[in-house]
Image (tube, rainbow, N blue to C red):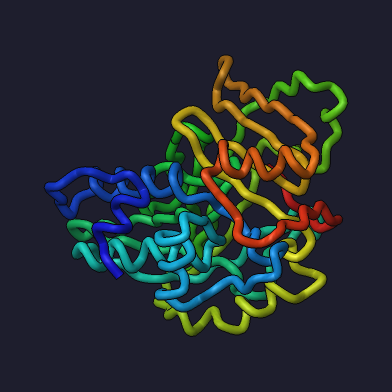
Length: 290
């Protein structure tokens, strides 16, 4: 595995790397704008690899994306390779319909330490919940970013990541009640502790998420990619684009329903993905918003 190949994949061209917050932010932003958050393997009859070499082959060599266990594992490798002090952490994702966090540790995120300060760095949540900058590990402080205001809060050793969202303008009136739309202005995302994890801690959940009927990843095919102004999302046959803050404290959300041929075209043109196997787009009933 070659760090220069990773840099080429994300379009990162800074030849003088300093182990500072600016470099960390730059790498994170390049990755989330080049590598989609997606689970398309599941709906093409292929496994979601957990091993680093398999992930590198999928994302870097085959120009694909991946879910959190993959894209953040790759980011962990890249940051560690260039010298950042990086730790894998495990998160429990909030489900608004159940009003609780997941029982299983299903999310992989990173902690990066720079000059004695800790930053949460996560390239693997996608959609409008994706952080664009590392978040300093400070409890109760609002940290405004382009997508929204993020906030970390600590209670009894457990850290909670929440966001304060803008209003939404949806010009396509027939999609006003879409199950893909986030309805809450204040949104819980996930919680985690600072206990260091290894990739082996995620082996069982990596299998579970690919086969369980209760998994959102088997229920829906999805792909999302950040842009300098917003985020593209494809769920089943529904394509959306969210432009952050297109008016004062309001996001623009545009919907389009695609046919099978258009799905393939959008994957190539919007997400830069060419699949080797036939995709079976799916929009099941598990909760998943954009």
